[in-house]
Amino acid sequence: MEKTKLSVNINKIATLRNSRGGNVPDVLQAAIDCQRFGAEGITVHPRPDERHIRYSDVRAIRPIITTEFNIEGYPSEKFLQLVEEVRPHQVTLVPDPPDALTSNAGWDTQAHLDFLKEVIARIKATGARVSLFVETNEEDIKGAALAGADRIELYTEDYARGYNKDPENAVAPYAVCAAIAHSLGLGVNAGHDLNLDNLRYFVAQVPHLLEVSIGHALISDALYYGLENTIQMYLRQIALGHQDKQAQSSESTSVAD
Image 1 (cartoon, rainbow, N blue to C red):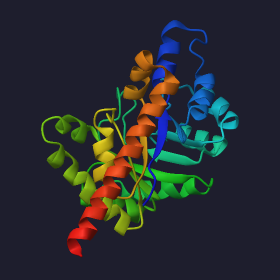
Image 2 (tube, rainbow, N blue to C red; image 1 turned 90 degrees about the vertical axis):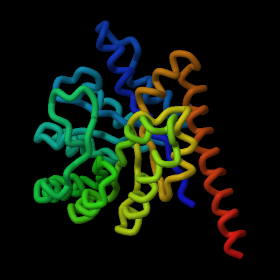
Image 3 (spheres, one colour; image 1 turned 180 degrees about the vertical axis):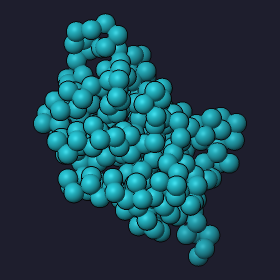
């Protein structure tokens, strides 16, 4: 059974720094600390206006961490040149317009297939893995495979919205789409609005989940619990989710026997 890794998005730390100027909090130290506290990846999402993570941050972080470095962004020429310079382990492509407050939609991979093929080939030439941000749409997942992506990242806002009311129905489309992606040879990541309340259930119910990228909720929780403790709390929820998944698998095997 695949182990789900936790990648910590540190954008919000940069947002706090930028609100005052100077270098407090220290984004580079935060990346080092997240890694030291158990994070299995560091995610950054530099935007054209550099309102949180700056391009200079991306360049400075790459040589100081040994864990997976994941850069998210829209594949503009400037972004692609940054990827070619920095050579991260993973690049997650999102279809955000320049003024987007946060990522709020997945790729229409069919409409943008030729564009994505060209961009993905260019990124893969650097040695990076490529993941496409998608919604729970089978055709878009098929398009991700046709475009040459290595993984998809499932956009989980709908799951987070529906979790408190009806978790089973909220997670069902993600479980189905993860299985489809796996059948097409795609790895499965997930992110957006996952938190300490809904993460365990998501991990338990979604098969083949390789990585979750969590920023806003985790950094917000760190204000109360401290960064080290918070990362350990999220890792614990992932571990419990895997335990639940294994228990479900054992029960299914017993029933079948």
